[in-house]
Length: 344
Ligand SMILES: [Zn+2]
Image 1 (cartoon, rainbow, N blue to C red):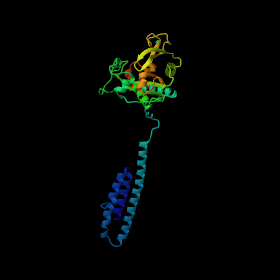
Image 2 (cartoon, rainbow, N blue to C red):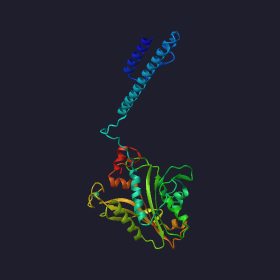
Image 3 (cartoon, rainbow, N blue to C red):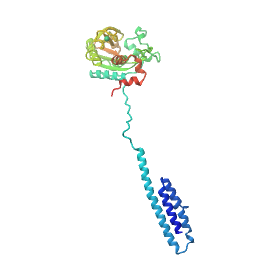
Image 4 (tube, rainbow, N blue to C red):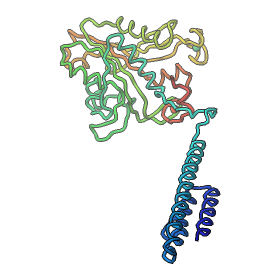
């Protein structure tokens, strides 16, 4: 029996040495020390031994158990360490690999232009106002001196939601709304940027949706020269200090007199080229002195108050400033186009 125990110990220790995984060690433990393990089997046979033999074999069996247990513990610790090392190796970070770039978005070019214009006018004491894109016929047309049936409405055909509700054709309704809010006894100095809509067929220079910024300054003693000075500052800040401006007589139902403003062509310095169609000038915006009817409807006494208003298209300004040849680029969401204008 003693020999049997020695064989068991020898075999067990050899197997433990050969084991390459923790699972195997677990199996060895069960095979030798478990309830049905070979060491247990031998010990069961101890009943047949004589009184003298029993303690000797018992002691030997304990030594064998201890030796196997000790060897199992050592090998388990060993393998655990190895597995940990393997795991760490697997998870090691290769610092020589190129990093994954973080994609940074940017504001849409039109948003950038609008924000630039906002900053400029805020610096001159204007407030920025917003209004609804779904507007009433009253605010979009009637309050701006465009009664029903007025021929100038043809130029601003739009999408009607009902007879009285429509997609606004300009940002001008915000002017009327603001004046009403100020109740006819406070100066108004505001700009209103936003999206506007027209029933236009889309082409390189027309879009059924585009952006506008309007400005309005109403106070006592506001003069045409104030408008000219303001627009001159705007042109120089947006297009360069060497730009000249020119005001041409024009017609808008809500201003009288009305003007259109051109800036001198940057490409030819006013000599005439294909960009300015030979004229040396490029049309930028429209404006004028607020029509007395518009002031009156909004609650301002035209005998006391005067004002100027102007409106411009950030789409057109962006096209001129960056040489964009098709307005539809702004609305197609083509990332290749848009990301050219991303600012860090
Ligand atoms: Zn030119």
